[in-house]
Length: 303
Image 1 (cartoon, rainbow, N blue to C red):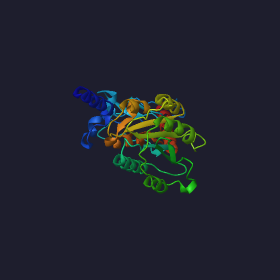
Image 2 (spheres, one colour; image 1 turned 30 degrees about the horizontal axis):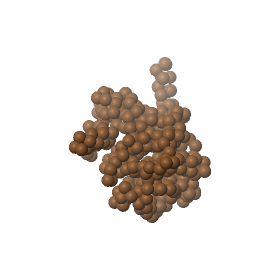
Image 3 (cartoon, rainbow, N blue to C red; image 1 turned 90 degrees about the vertical axis):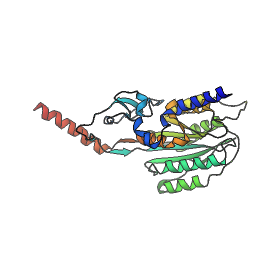
Image 4 (tube, rainbow, N blue to C red; image 1 turned 60 degrees about the vertical axis):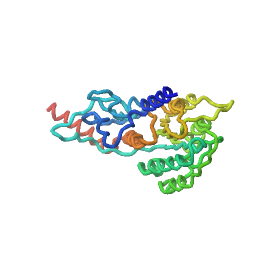
């Protein structure tokens, strides 16, 4: 029994490794230098799978984990010159469809459910909830999953963080069974679709809060197949492991788009930092000015 316990802990640490650090150790995860200037990718191929989560994922090299406009990749760092950071262009928040899938089953427990609600609240403060920016949906994992707020429930000026927070505050613990498979299919068909208000050409993020436990049923769907269908629709999926009575790491890995998209609740701040990184793109005016300056320098050199 001790061997299997130790093995479970080792697996947990190996997959949550990038996030297992205290606030004072954050610099240890970062290689020196800056990410190169970001250029806009107009067409991203699906599914989107990040190659890294933090710099150390790129090895003990001069590379950094940077957003290339579509995904996080290992890129050659730009060195600081004379102690000054390089001047990049202004970054803007791009539109996003953000969906929270919350496990309210008996195995998760009411106390963990309260913690999940706090994490959702914290996430909402990080983004601009508005008609032209981030739209939010909230759904509950249960015997029969249900949608508390869809992407098109709020309209126009009513799309605000205050109105979404009200929905979160009113969420009630259900203590039912866990049908993650049905919840994933519902997210694809009824939320990220045109029916649910899903928008084309915007960032699509699904955050799944669960212990990974799946209630067995003869009609149970294959989790990974449902995940891959969502990924092909352009959805990036992050699973947040809620350690309750037990944790099903196998299912949590199946739910995440990649191992780099698996996080523990204790280190949710690292996930927020990653979401902030991939939600930024060069502002159109700033990028035009940068390209103009680069073109002007080339002309000057020729003369």
